[in-house]
Image (cartoon, rainbow, N blue to C red; front, side, top):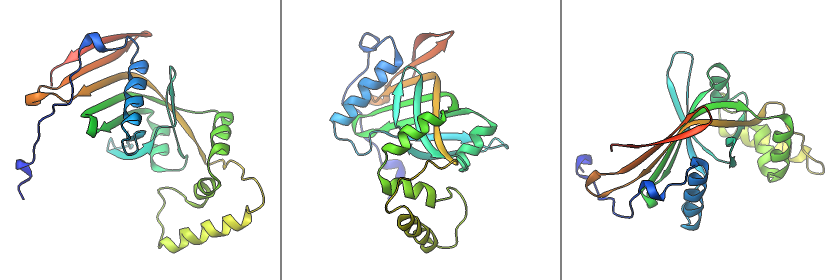
Length: 211
């Protein structure tokens, strides 16, 4: 198999400036709603990119849990690699790959921690199994075997069988305040449509980018 022979045309749609919302969050919500309606697998899945102290980039997929005019929210173990990297360098990039719709959204911005109240509100809304898993897993740490993780999970499941689970201090969320949001729509002959929203003192400028 020759990877260089794998190609296809992007023919689903186009994107014109007249079709864009003035506010990129409104435009994002429109596309997200369409991704959900299209029954895409994990439409809220996004790649989160951070960098370590040496400038080495890292990427992983997490789920978007809310979005509004203040930014994009996700949750994680605060001792995880991504959280520790954000502690040192709050610059962050998000990427939504909605391939079946031939769309992508790329976001750059700064991540800030959510308040304890926001963390508690979301944590309490999670299924109990997810709450237990959040405590059982010391995210990003090395473990010798999966059985250790399962054993810890089962121990905690028994411990909290008849009671509420407190929000662990090492777990919480981040809000990404966007500085730029780019919308990409696949186009015929690789002439894709790209529009970049850039924040300038609270106002959004819109520029078309060459594919």
